[in-house]
Length: 212
Ligand code: URA
Image 1 (cartoon, protein in one colour):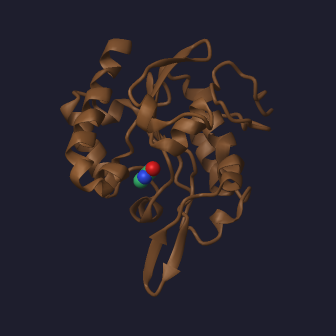
Image 2 (cartoon, rainbow, N blue to C red; image 1 turned 90 degrees about the vertical axis):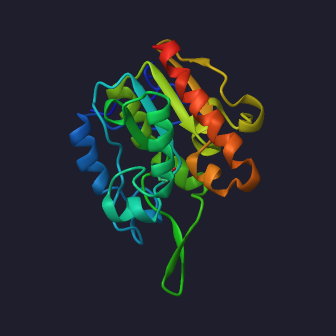
């Protein structure tokens, strides 16, 4: 039976039509065969969330990149390495967190032998949202962290601005608290601002301990 989208453990600002039910392992299996948008075709595989099904903290990124597409796990490429370093500096154990993405397939443009990352469209994000909703409904995290604007707007709505509202804790439905911070890829692209953005990411991750 699919879950009702108004489940109080699904604190998403954007609509979800139908939410698949089942354990995280069952959801991961079902998502492997997802054809809800065209991204499944060129991608190597679905990159579902990873981590304990009873984690109290969920981190939500944007979409898998080249490395995640190959390995089938979230945040295992260069952005993941930045995130791992920031988590360690903030005193957080990655293995205790549930990590996932807003969109579960790699989207890219082929240029010769290179696969250039492309942002998922609003329609592709909407098609994929049922999986994020299902993960939230199953894991029921007390703390939800959006990494980057795509995840932030999925949680808090399209008017959310990371530059203005980064690091601000809010109530998310009845059961969770949430916050958005820099995406590690933005830090990698941040040039002269990247040291400052990295420091803010670590500071934001440190503030999780005060919400637990
Ligand atoms: N960027 C993301 O948003 N997620 C990943 O898993 C990797 C890079």
